[in-house]
Length: 463
Image 1 (cartoon, rainbow, N blue to C red):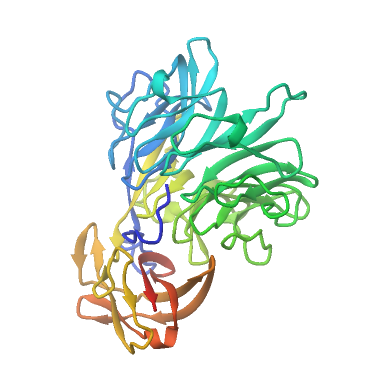
Image 2 (cartoon, rainbow, N blue to C red; image 1 turned 120 degrees about the vertical axis):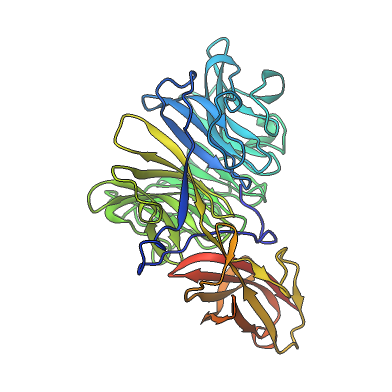
C-alpha cells in the first residue's frame, strides 16, 4: 500500500530517447518460473505489490481467478510456499496486499460459499482467523482496514453497500456500512492510510465515483467525484493526499478515459483527464504517493497496453522495458512508492504471466536534507545545498544526464508548484541551491525527473 511523505526512498526509471541502452527504465522479472500443479493453466493475474516487492494475485482458469498467491519480496512465485490455500473449498482470489504481507480477497469454504478473507502478515488463508464473512473484499491499507461490499440483509431486489472495516477487525454491519451516494448500490475498491475509501455508487444521475473523508461514511454532498462529462465514473485507487484515480465516460458515454483528481477534489474535466496511448479508452488502476498513475489504455493499433502516467505524460510501459518480440504488457494492477510496478504480460500463447517491473535508476537525496523527511530549515536561511546522487541497479554512477527539479508546496491538502528548474551537475551529483527565505514558511516536496519521468524525491519544511 501507499506510504506517507516521510518515507522518501523511491526509485523510478529514466527514458533516454537518444540511446537504446538508456531506453530501458525497468528490469522485468517474470514471476512464473516453475510449473505449479495447483495452476494447470500456467496463467495468472496480479492484484497488488507492497513496499517490499511482494506481489499478490491469482491463478486463472480461462478468464476466472481460482487460486490466490503471494510471493516473497522481489521473488518469482514459489508453488511450495506461495499458494495461499482456501477456506476448505476449491477457489481463492487475492485482490490486494499491504506492507505487512496481509492479503485480502475471497475464498470458497467447504459448503461452496464464498467468504472474504484477510490473512495475518505473510500467513496462509486460515478459516479460524481470517474469515470476514459473506462479503466481498477488494482492498486493504497498512493498518488492516479492509474495503469492499456486502449484501444488505433482506433487501429486495438485491442491494450491495460499500464497507470499510476497523483495523484488523471482522466486518460489523452496524458500523462498517458506508452507505451510498443516494442510490441503492455502492462498492468500495481502494483505501488509503487515513481511512479514505474510494469506489463507486449509484446516484441520481448514474454510477459515480466517490471518495470519503477519513474513516467517514459516504456523504452525497461532499464525496461524489462527478465525471468527465458522461453519466458513469468509477474510482479504484487513492493516495494519502486524497488524489483518486479511475475512469470516467465522456459526454456521449461512448469512450472512457483515465482520471486523476486533485487532492480531495472532484473530477475537473479540464485538468484531470489523463488521455490515452493513442486509442479511445484508458483506465487508471493505482496511484503512488508522488502522483504517478498506472493503468492500461488502448493504442492506435487497437491493442491494450499498460501505462505509467508521470509528470503530465502517459508512457507506454512496453517502451520502457527490455525488448521482447511478441510480448506485450497489457495490464497493470499496482505501483508502490519505490516505483515498482505489478503488471501482466502475454507473449503470444494462451497463458499470461504476472511480472514485476523494477526501476533501474534511483536518485536518493543527500544531506543536509535527510531521507526520512524530517529536515526543517529556518525561513531566514538564505541557502541550503540540495543534492541527489544517481544509482543504477543500486550502484552509484557518475554518468548523469540532464535532470529537472520541481518544488511543490503542500498546504491544506493542496499542491502548488513553487519552483521548476534544471538541475546542475556538480561532480558526481545533481545540485540545486535551495533558498528557504524565498520559498517562505511551509511544507515542500522536491521531485527530480529526467525526460519527464520521476527518479527521486525529497520532503522538507521551512519554519
